[in-house]
Amino acid sequence: MELSVQITWLFILAIPIACIAWTVTHEEIFKEPRLYCVERSQECKKLVERKFFYLFTCEYCFSHYITAVFLIITKYKLLYDDWRGYLVSLFALVFIANIYMSLFAFLRQSLKVEKIEAKLKDKELKEEINK
Image (cartoon, rainbow, N blue to C red):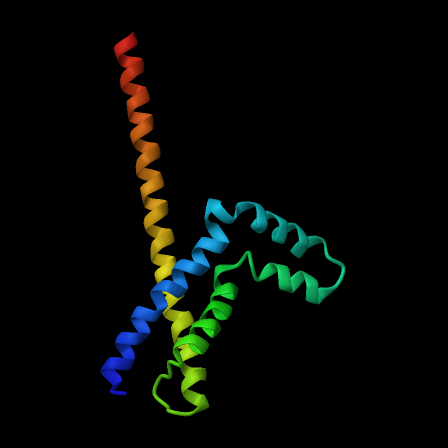
C-alpha cells in the first residue's frame, strides 16, 4: 500500500477509535458503568483488578485496546508489511486518536464557557430590567 494511502487510513481510522474511547470514558450513556469502574479502580485490593477497572475510566488507556480491536478487524499496517507494521500503526493510531479527543475536549470546554457567559449576561440583563 502506498504511503499516502496509509496516512489517509491513519487519520480516518483514528476517528472511530477516538469516538468510541471518548464515549465510553466520558459520555452520559456509560455513566453508571464508568462510576462502577472508578469505584472498583480505587477500592479493589489486587493491583491487577484496580488497573483493569481503570482502563474504562481513562480515554488514553482505553484507546489502546480499541485500537488493537480495530487493527484485528482491519489488518491495517503502517510503514512495514510484517508485525512491525502493526506495532507502528498501534501507537500512531493511539496518538492521532488522542489528538482528536484533546481537540474535542478543548472545543467542548470552550462551548461550555461561552454557554455559561451567555447565561450570566442574560441574568444581568434581567436584573437590570427588573430594577
